[in-house]
Image (cartoon, rainbow, N blue to C red; front, side, top):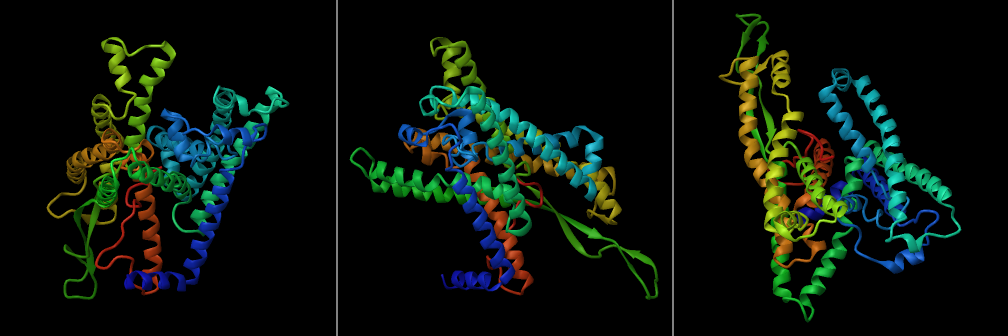
Length: 455
């Protein structure tokens, strides 16, 4: 505890770090206040009186990423989801289109790609805002709509306000990245997700300690399991396989002048056990939303083998759902890793930097060796990621409330753990640059910067 207090004092004593943290907290407060400002044309009193637990399925994932603003019909209802969609599209386009891939390798080209991403974000936001207007006119929000607003005026104002809100949230994220601490967009997503944790934790406490609950002992067991899940996710996020490297260097002025020698500076390539981040879980969830959509459109019932199986795929506590979910996560982990990981390019970079893996010839043998190692460590990473993905369903089946069970792994905690580690890594860098002790004794905090961010 004394060490922790001393570390906090060191953080606060660094003026630049203190300003960055306060700036980040201020913009987070602005974002959270905006999540409670209702759109024009909606009666907030009727909306609050309706209550409800928010949408389910894909819309529930949107609502979680937006920090509940989606279900509140807020001006930030779409959050940064359009920007995330545009960023993912541009990232995949860089893999398919050589011109975009060339731009992403240059500093000026990356600025151009970022500008294209902003333009695409506006287009995506307009389409999603129009779909959100149709959702607001549904049975859940119909009573909260103000009758004096004409349908066209409501559509126009909602699309304009939501587009402006998304661009403002994106601007907040960029400002946090530039002048704050951590990755701004990821921090806003994490804040939105973790904003539900205190409420879910309180509800679970009263549910277990009440007359119909299992008792405080079960709640304490749940908390121990919750901490264990967090520790496991940290290990999954931080896990790397280090491939040793040697750098050739020249000796100048010796008896053997200009002679290349091996065994210069030693380094390593950190290959992440989970290099795909949270994307496989998001892809798997999107696929498993399809059965519920099909049943809704076709009015299929749970009668019969086909209907029963489709119905089980909409229940995250069922055995069929978790098996299919785990298999999809493993498959998408390999697929997404193959998209973002290029061993040939890595081998070429090593050769240009005059470095090599001991015992492996440069060029194609190095690329094959790196690819083989990556394939081997991807399997345990994919399995552990699949386990993290199905843990919320297992917790729900064991009697944990749905709201609190969502934090036993899955998208919520993976994003939260990854973003917190990234932020702590930046704070530790500021401390070490000024000759203070790091956040952890004997080790370094490793974020996801070695591979790619979550979103």
